[in-house]
Image (cartoon, rainbow over all chains, first blue to last red; front, side, top):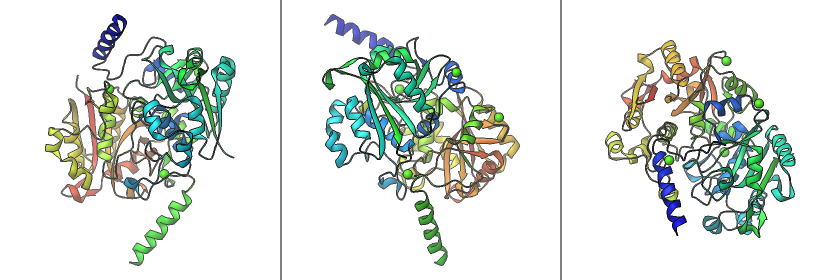
Length: 238
Length: 238
Ligand SMILES: [Ca+2]
Ligand SMILES: [Ca+2]
Ligand SMILES: [Ca+2]
Ligand SMILES: [Ca+2]
């Protein structure tokens, strides 16, 4: 009870101190994309083929449970897959957080369930796999820091290849639960990945070390039969 | 009648040929941001302080008349101004194309009128000026290519400074009417500006030469008492 009260007081202080910044302050282990250090990481990144296609399609999750939906929409638009209609945009088409759902995605997980619970790593992989793309789901507990770093770096360096991560925010010093967002670049010099965080009302995109990110993926998800979180590798079908 | 039919046939062909690309093809004078040439312009750009704050807040216009609203929302979020509440994001706040309207913006131009007509350059400037920022509206006919290039390059190179342009798409080889979007960077080598086009369902961000962009701003807007289009310079108040 005292702990909960203290938490509320601390959150109020954090929100008050952010009244000009308008997003929550970052812990010292994270570097914002729009800072001088973040810009340097980007300019000297070893892998950034994923960045512009994703940045050009960056969206804010539509509600606090749609991080997986927003991440999927970004990747599908970045892949330039044939998209469903949007009445407001006729005759043009694009994936949105309203039209990405289909009979196939409802069979994976109903949109109403996502609205209440969000998605697990396995549901995210199956959700994206309803589209004509190649999808691999990797639980962190079945992987390793070195395997993850090599695979993610490889994907981020090739056109038409994307990585979406499912991690525990608290483990990288953020508020606070499980979250999903796409990776966009890798800088070998600092050994950091760029996360395009889809909760843009809450946090800016951040550069996080591979070790911190892997540790945050290597956490137990009680909504997924206590399996670990992890990453999804997505590629255009040849 | 024949001309209209021919136009419809050509648009169908264009849409058909774009069935994989999912956005309309670019004319040869424009370079997409996510192409190898576009990436090089960015990496070697002479002014790009505006880029990451805007890219981190890139949105798609909510309907085909809201290009000015979407551009304003991007700049206000990039400036990290105190933002209105969004019920879905409570306790976090951010500017959206739903909550950016106020008694002050309704006095400039009612949201319902924007939904029907879009905004003119002067309305755009007055709309943004309802927020605590310094705003300058420049009609192209009262400016020149050199004056515009120097001012836009200067703004794009300084944190907290932004440029929004109002131009005729047809004049840069796009489909087709008046449009509004933010600039994000300037490359002196190619003398090109990067437009973060908010009609993301229709066109990707493009690098356009200063001369082509200025000519497209130096066009008559019959919705604005036949004044020319132009650009708006926005800066955080010190
Ligand atoms: Ca590097
Ligand atoms: Ca499309
Ligand atoms: Ca240059
Ligand atoms: Ca905010």
